[in-house]
Figure: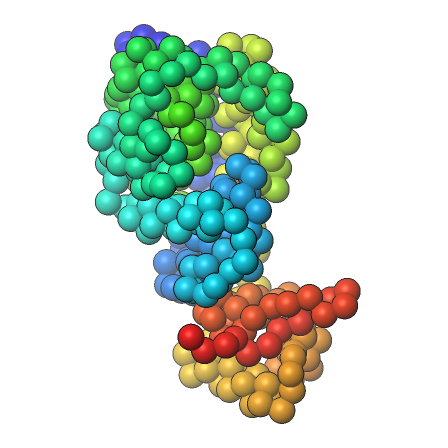
Length: 331
């Protein structure tokens, strides 16, 4: 990749249309203010982000277990998986302190993300590597180690200097970063972190949008887009996929925002008081109980249950074929 030229990709009519559509959606969600105003919603989305990005890398923790780990509770799971969650949460919480165009910041982020998990944490890999998919098929061979530092430096410089919209630049960076494959392990999760970081510098709302969760939901499409771009020698199809995932993430957040009832803090506390009183006489509570007691829709009941679970007030567990909730144990 020459630093004076764009990496290979084509800006299609579809890409331009998606960029315009996303910009409009960003304006809508920024105007609502829920993501920046609600610490609970931000934490819920941050948890979904971490769960989604790590699940792509075969981390076995459920979203409930990720929540429990971050609430300081004991979880029966592989120590490696728990460490991955704690490391990822730490670096995402300090994301706003990272310079998205700094090699040192990139290495530092990898050091935190992979701390205690690999020997070469926080440094570029020293050996050649082949990139394989979930079935063990080789997708491509990463750049030879001697060339990695220079190519990463050029990619960061291009991302900083290019006058293209950040929505496009961030997608190109993500693809080219995975193509270089600069680290012994952790390239996927660091690439997705950096994509989010770049977008958040364009608009802070992206720091709290769980784009990684959407990628996890569409994981095969993610790999297919990388493979298709590898075969074409250009990141065009990957850009199209990522813009689609970004758009889906914003639309999901908007839908959640529309479901949210504008309520004062006292109203929210009153709702919890009703539930807490019910729980003093009952072992568990379900979505239908919330609907009946509070007079809300099933979707709103689900949102409230998720928020109270994220806050550590309730714990979700499987009761037969359905989910139920009980009061969380005090630490």
